[in-house]
Length: 88
Ligand code: SF4
Image (tube, rainbow, N blue to C red; front, side):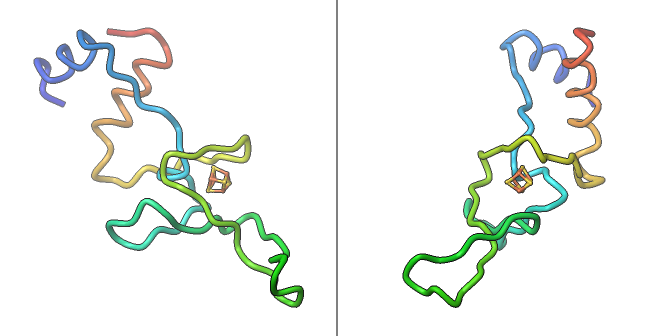
């Protein structure tokens, strides 16, 4: 990552949060904020015979989160690693 970019991100207090968007279990259609979790299902109330994958939002999170950042996000993954350890 460009050094000045990294410094600016730290200067403005930029933080990368773990969310469903980076979770190994999530599935999203391109460009959509809504998708499904591959780990959890629920019984739909109106359709009693229907077990469905749980609907999720990109900005959501749960304790079963497992990080799976795409290779092209590597620079931001490194930035996040630095924020986790308080490095500048
Ligand atoms: S963070 Fe939780 S709810 Fe979101 S995709 Fe991962 S396991 Fe599913």
